[in-house]
Length: 151
Image (cartoon, rainbow, N blue to C red; front, side, top):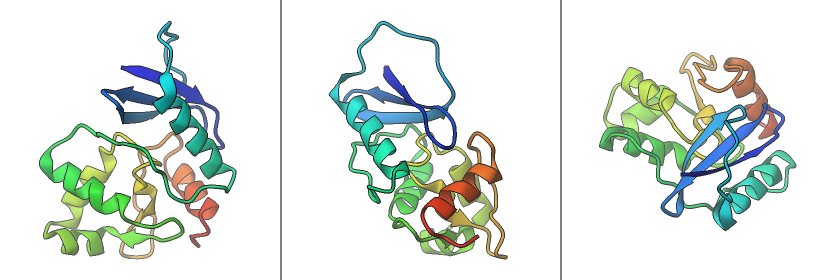
């Protein structure tokens, strides 16, 4: 697995690739490696930087998150939420024929945050719900504001 790290307004982000696809985005700096990141990771870093610079609203990268069939179904639904939009856990759960709690659990296990924009999923009562990113809800709030979603 190869990796590349970039600074972002929400902290350092390390992007991991395997077999020609992005498999994870994690907060923080990993141990250094001698392996060159390659063109895919360079492009992923460029797209994340463009997203935070306000020049990109849709990522175009091959993604291969590891998870159960149910989790992958949830992540695909989340990935379809457009930039600047938000959906509720309940709405997505009804759409997928599952419980909001189960959907929330899959959101919390999203291995590719930001690229699979789980920050765009909100609580049904107008609350933010949870977020597993670096500073939790503060990071979610920042990402939503960055996209122009009123929170």
